[in-house]
Each structure stands twice: as structure tokens, then as C-alpha cells.
Image (cartoon, rainbow, N blue to C red; front, side, top):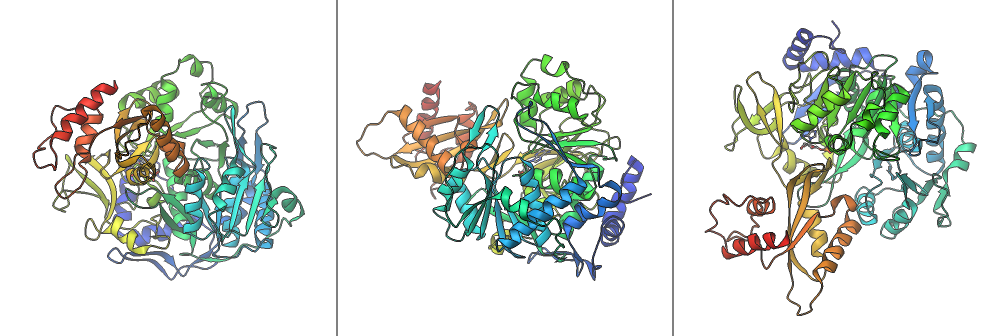
Length: 638
Ligand code: WTA
């Protein structure tokens, strides 16, 4: 029996028990058997959640790109590593072999070096889903620079905040991007952002849409000519196990985005291990994750996890509805995709279209279907299972977070019996705990509480960039000696987990985490706005829709509410990005507040979602009458 590849339920239980009883021995065996190390570790694990401090494989030396590329060259050099499928189906797909990936990453790494990037420097990557995105990530890792990928749907302000937070000295971008029938002027957004970023010395620009753009003398350089001149050989920088590999920003319920810092060795071992098991990847499989690499799902399960296993990973530039709603299925058929990993919001948007989009394609290559990003509702689960999987491909409902680095709770296909909407059982090495309101751990089955993890796993983020105190407060202060996830969960009669959703002020819209506070801060910048509160309401496709309650300043100036609504969404688009636009804006004379001035979101959420039957005790509010006014205002909107 190998620890690395779980093949039966009996093995799962055995391996899981071992991983809990002897976690260090367990992870040591995995690390020893399946990775290339320049030097072995002195100690497998050192941890103290009260500080918090977590170190895996301390003393070990390695380079993650040797593990993701070099060591596959001998046996799999001509195998496709990255299969790039462009936005336009008429443009040819690119098969980038491991040999070619090796050369291209080395060339890119040399360009980074020639442009002054050194080990430990931060590089911001703001690119669409084109091969340069994966290659630039790996090039940073090759030379020990810390990459900070910013999703190319974020606005200039959001980009600037992220560049400045971790002092990036370089930005890698493209002239523009394709998104279905649209093009987006990425370089224009970068130019706008860089007005606020003094530390950026160089901007490397990939050519994708051949638009005419502004190139700032001395700062901006076209990428391709530099690559063409660069050597295809680049010795990997030898890194310490705990050296940071990357920073990835995630929204919190308050304050600015948190730059989660992931380490090198632990992250590599954990993403590779979970990829192998959750997708039961076997040689020859064509694995496709539809996420954008700008999110953690893309980092861990398009780039690092698959490549560490020598897999073929599909990278898709486009969107599910271009040229029409059959695009995903056309790609599955064309490349004979075996594992397909997507988000519930995508499933729901495809499920509302005619089945004919799907039926005209041969999906028989599929063996495993995955879901990630938010709870998958029962209807979407069945549609996915019946129509895409034809009842033959198990669905892995994978629960995890940017902070966890890799999948934490998930079925293992063909091993764990699945139940719709249940993420089922923890991965080896993961020790979940459900907590009640008094901070006690709930024992036994048939309980519901807040989900914590009580022992470290190798993929856990080690800190928040520049703010360790916030890391401690956010994740390790709610419960003693436990990592708090921010999610609620239920354990059923057999011990399966079902994630019930966020218990904080983070709202997941189309699979994107949005903190309410940053959106409210943006709205409050509008000169006519006094105050605002955002809540989430269930939405058929997006999972949640954003509903904003806004109070206006009494300026005497009368403005058209229609215009105001547009302006408010415009401000949100500028500060965060179009993903955070509000679906509904209700102007209200006041907001319900406690005597201490705290906005009662619970009440607002119920009103927004049209459920006013039981608002609870409102008599303790500063101004109970405002509740009735808000209810009437909501009715008037319809
Ligand atoms: C939610 C995405 C239910 C959850 C990898 C978590 C899920 C947040 C699931 C993290 C799932 C993710 N079932 N909820 N299978 N997967 N979530 O950081 O609330 O973008 O805390 O990482 O998404 O989102 P993030």
C-alpha cells in the first residue's frame, strides 16, 4: 500500500488513521517517495498555533520547478504539460510539452534576472489565461522571486493596492485580453494603477490582442524580443523549505485584502498529494480545471499540483458561453478531457440553457467531475451528475480555501461514496473540528457548528504579508489552538461533512469571495452617500446576489436615483472590479443599528431576501421605526 495513492475505502481509512496518529511520519514518507530534494529536512514539523508559527520540512532545500518540470524530462519530455485552448475556437490549441515548458520557463527566468529581479523580490503578474501566465509564475519560482498574481478582472485601484501592499518591483502584463467577444485593455488598467505605485521599475508586456498601447520609455518592455534573446538554460535557485513561494490576495470581511503567503515545500507536497488523490490522475489523462489562475484554484490545481505529478493540464482562455453555451463540452470532446473541475456557478449557468448544447458532444472520456468555490446546491449537483457525468463519473465536491493552499475535505472518486451537497471526508492529515458558540468542540455525529482545523497540514498559509498580527487575529484567535475557517459545517450520521457557508461578512458571488466592508467603503466615497450596508441574497446562478442599502446625505440637491445607482456601481467597478457590482440598490432614510451603533445585518439580510416573517427582537434598536420604512422601501422597489 502506498501512502501516496489511495485506491480503496479501506486504504483511505488506514492511511487517514496513520496520518492522524503519526502525522510527521506520514508526511515524511510522502515527501521522501515522491519529490526531488537538494537536501533533506532536519525536522518534519514544528508548530505552535498560539504564535502562530508553522514550519514543515525545515532545513530541506529544493526548487519547486525542478519538481514540476526538470524531473519529468527524462521519461515525459515530449508529453504535453500545458494544453492551451484559446478564446477563439478557430485559433489552434497549443500543446506545450515538458521539454518546451522547461525551455520557455528558463528563458523567462533569465529575462527576469536581466531585468533586476532577485530571489525574494516580489513580482506582480496581471495577465489573462495565456501560456505566459503559467510560464511567468514558474519563472519566478525558478529564481526564487515571490509571485503575486492579481486576477485580470480587478480594477486599477484594486491592482495598485495589491502592488503596493507587497512592494512589487515588476509587473508582468499583456497589451490586452480576450474575453468571449470582448477585448479588455489590460495595459491601460496597469498604466492607471501605476500612477499610484512608485516602486515598480519595469513592466513586461506580452502581446496578445495586437492593440496599439502606450509604452512608457524606460519602464515598459515588450516581452517577446527579450525572450527570443534569452538563454534556454537557467539553473534553479535552491530554496529553503519555508521560503515564500507566492502571495495571493483574498478578501477579508474587513479592511484591505489579505496577502496570504504560501511556503515552498509544504505547499508543493500538499497540492501534489491532493491532486493525485482527489482527481485519481493516471498517466495519459487530460485534466481540465476551468478556474482562472488568478485564484488559488488555478495556482494549486492548474499549475503546481498537476505539474508536480507530470500531468497534462488544460488552460482555457475563454468563457463558457462563447461562441455559445456548448464551448465547455466542445473542449471536453476535442481534447478527450478525463477530469473536469469547475464551480457551481458555472454549472448553474449552463444548466439553465438547453440540453442540446451538451447532447451534441461526446463526453464519454470523462471519469471524474469536480466542484469548488461554494456549496453546490442539490439541483446543480444532479444536473451535473446526470447530464455531464451520465451517472458514471463521481462528483468530488472539494472544500478548501486560499488560506489552506489545497483541498481539505473531499470525496476521493471511486473510493468515497458520494452524497449530493456533502464534501464528505477529510483528506489524510486534515483534522476538522466543529465548535459551538461557547468555544467547545462538538463531539460525535449529527452536530453543526463552526469549522476549525486542529492540527497543521503542509499547505497552510504561513502568514499575511506584512501583518502577522492580523493573521493571528483572523485565523487563530476565535478558538484556542485551532485554525478557524470562517465557515459553518454539519457532520451527519456517518461522519460526512456538509459545508453550510460563511459565518462572517464574506459573501461568495459567482464563486468569488467578496468582503462587505471593502464594497461599503467604495460606495461611501460617493459624495452623495452617507452610509451603506451590503448583504447577500440567494441567486439562481451566482449563488448570492449583492443587495445594498444606501442612505444619502441631506444636501438639498436632488439627484435622479437612477443616475445615482449607476454612479454607485461605477465607483464599485473602479475600486474593486465589475464582479462586486450590486444587483439591487435600495435607498433608505436610515439603517437599523444597535444602541452601540452596530448595523444589524441580520435584519437587513432578511428584508432584502423578502423574509420579514421573523425579524427577531427589534425593540433594542436605536430607531426601531426604520425597519418598517425599509420593508416598505423594498416593496416599492418591486
Ligand atoms: C467556500 C476557493 C462549500 C467556503 C478554493 C470557503 C466552499 C471559501 C467549497 C474559500 C465547497 C469553497 N463547498 N463551500 N466545496 N469550496 N467554498 O479562498 O466558504 O476563493 O471558505 O478558495 O469558499 O474561497 P477561496
